[in-house]
Image (cartoon, rainbow, N blue to C red; front, side, top):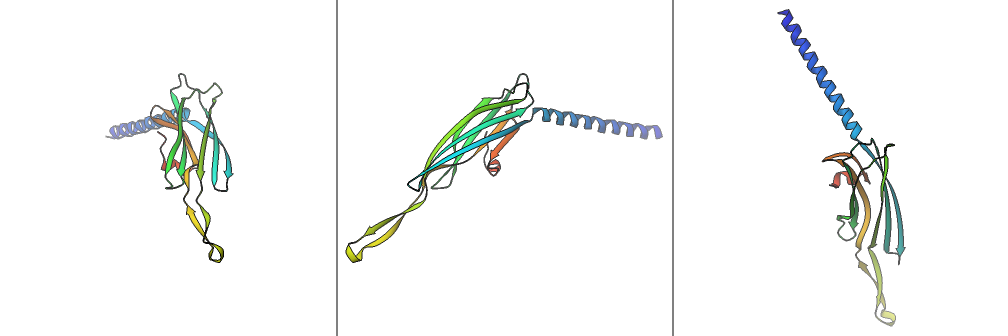
Length: 178
């Protein structure tokens, strides 16, 4: 009877050990697949007539991680804008390229240039009447166009996301790059 209990304990210990080894191996596999994503964002804004805004945005995407042979990973990026009238977020530009990390494990993907033009909400003053009955009234003009709000970059290995970066961070839960 005692030998049977001892065998059960040994068997349970062996099962637990195998599970731990399996977990450690899969954690190591996931860590070796992970890609760190950094994005340098440069925004230039020009305002004309105090309410027309032209934006030029440049994104430089840098990837760091372990080089794989062959590398089946893909980086997908999307730039987002917000409509000035209805405040809805929309896609301004999107792209995709293959990941090809060098032996040092770093790759600069591409420069992404995005341009937008929008008009802010503003008021225009109008005068009516002549002489003493002349009155000035303000007419409200709704904004229009799209303003740049951020980006999303995700690195995929097959269907699995192995690296991502959103700017600002609040876009992460709101939008899916896939």
